[in-house]
Length: 411
Image (cartoon, rainbow, N blue to C red; front, side, top):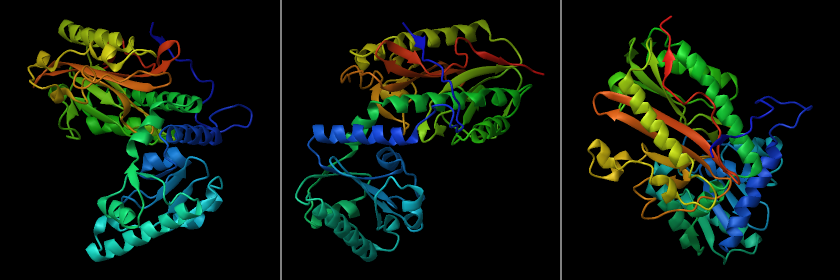
């Protein structure tokens, strides 16, 4: 049976009079989860770069305007080392005292200084890492690596380090959410859904798409979220193609809004809702939406521990339903996917992969389930919901009305 997840008793603000989100516990639970995965795979050290990986491992954010500007050397049995970018390292110990070991990161800005300078910097990068691993007695052990380019990998190998892939370890850890992560994601969804009312208000009687997006994003930013919002309207509501077209929504048109990528404390949401301006949905539109709603919730009902992604994927229609020849033509459109600090995490639920290669559904995964219905070049409807796979079964995290197309009044 599909039920709603319990509502939170707190919001995004701070208080000393109530237990709200506990950032220290969030960091501790994630680190323990990562270490458990590393021990299970007998990997003693993990070198990771990238915003989601760095935040998962340490709770830190950093410079992301170029790749590999900062990175984390994380250990299964000891405290991590953070290699920080210029500027950040001078403030790091003061602002994030839970990290005990800070060192200067080496970067080559994607090679723009030229191949010789890149090789020199990469060699220094590898030398610094080799020194830390030697200090920890791990220089001869496998080093899992994620988020680095070939210059980094080549330098590490030339330094005599044994590198193995680290991305799968990060995905495995992130796929199962800790108790504090579930609370954080619930709050992220709660905050994100406050964007729908101002989004709708801005489209009363129709109007510019960007006005609705701006109104929603302003609400999100005011609540401390990292806002991201989108819209498609009229004839662009079926094939998910062009966006940011500066289109003006006209009375009588269908549209859908998306909150895909909006995040709170780094935890992303992925939500769609469908609206119509100035009228009630037509019988054809109601039928399209009902079919979408029914099949999506049939798939959601399968999201319980012990099931597999194939059990849910069988409720998605084949791509041939819309005249396509390959299931890849509906990839990211007719799909369920894990979501957390990354927009896409395990598991994935679709006909393309889940039927031949099913993945287990495990307790405390969080999955976004989405689909669409309509006609190419004409228009259609979309819906996406977020689901926590609890021990008792699927629990819906979003509460904004999804049972029908929502009408935006003219006045």
